[in-house]
Image (tube, rainbow, N blue to C red; front, side):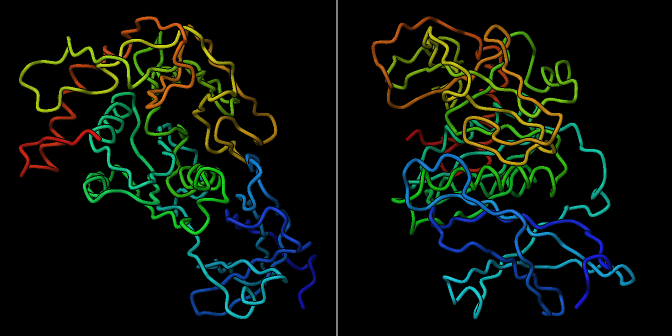
Length: 375
């Protein structure tokens, strides 16, 4: 065997997995496989359930295995990896391999990150079918400066998948099947923590985006003093911030629609960011339903509402409520008696947003004269 002092570490493989919270094994290993189908086992240096377990029996795990190569031999990078642990004999006898994700452009492996914004979207589940909301969400974030989206679906309608395929063909989105059906009842919110971590690492390593906005489809980060999210980050990011935390206010679906600013000629007039104009007066505290746009390169462990672990020297920045808020368009109200105030901020995107939504719906649903269904 090769002694450690004759080896050098060339990197590490990080795996996000859904595993039992109380895994009995004290040791997990990665089995890495190469292009010629040779493989070897590496003991994990770091392995554990991440935050946000919420009393479930399964949890999102983060596992890190170092990659060593003999000093005098050329570097070979593995193509696939599988997890192995003693209490699951099959994991050793018949490993389930997944492809390892490398930079889309390998010349960017050590490059400075591009100052671009990607969007990590929470899992689409329960046969998600709100086509109009999906198109509005993407076009709103594009107006804010986002250039790429990552979607993970557990279950989505055929029409929603058509929209996702459309954005994928345009090079604007990556779409992944998120196979957690077997654990939907014993895992917090469809394994959202594993999914968000997978996404933030993907944004950083595969596509070299500096930023990732980590949100659900009913949430819009809204700068109040800058023209867009991109403008805000350009002016306010001094380089040592792991995440910009946007505090939560609610708009409610049951509230009446105000379509005053929707031009009569539109095919899709009822956009949620334009027709819901009353929000809760109370701004929730940071880390309570807040959402974060992160510097993807600084993240070690991401949570649903906050950064749990960042690289040394990086800290969170809580966005002041006069500078930016998270507009959360909820279907069901948490407290239906909360005081509401009128807020027209999102309407500054109105005319462009209406045009872009109609144009996209026409491209995807030509046979329906460009009408996107509103679930």
